[in-house]
Structure formats: structure tokens, C-alpha cells
Image (tube, helix red, strand yellow):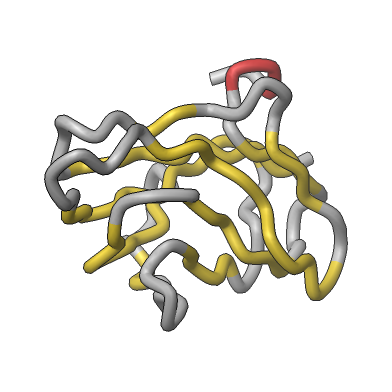
Length: 109
């Protein structure tokens, strides 16, 4: 996946919080080809996950989600960046409310 198609782009090694603005995250894993999945910490708001170190190149956050009736699609964003840099694409990527599995595509340069 090229950088232009990623939902969040940043410097490899960056520590940041990936966010959604609706839905509830109940499980999150960071997946990189050739590596074991890494379980990510979910924020108390259940709409954010901590990425401890953005992998170089392509990676994916897989989300297990719960949607209350009437909750809209979720926009993908970036909250606090603790180290390095990371930013969401503009316009933001979307996780659709009719799906219990969400995906956030990442790219680290």
C-alpha cells in the first residue's frame, strides 16, 4: 500500500494515539507482515488506541468494534503524539458503522 493510501502517516518509531470519533473499540492489534500481531492498549474512552512505535513501511491496526444503534460512521484521527510525528490524512479515513471489524492503515517513513 503506498503512503498516499494510508489513513495515518508518520515517522517510523513514532509513539502516538490513533482515534475514532464514534463506536467502541473492544480489541485492537497492530499487524506487520512477517511479525506476530501486537495487542494495543485501548483508551478509557474506548475510541483510541496507543501505537507504541510506528513500524517502517506498511502496517495495519485491526479493531474489534461495537456500535450502538444510530451511531454514525467513525472518522480516523490522531490524538497525542508522544514522540516523532504522525498525522491523519485529509479528508480522514472512515470506519463504517455496519462492520464489527475496523481497519486503520498506517505508513511509517
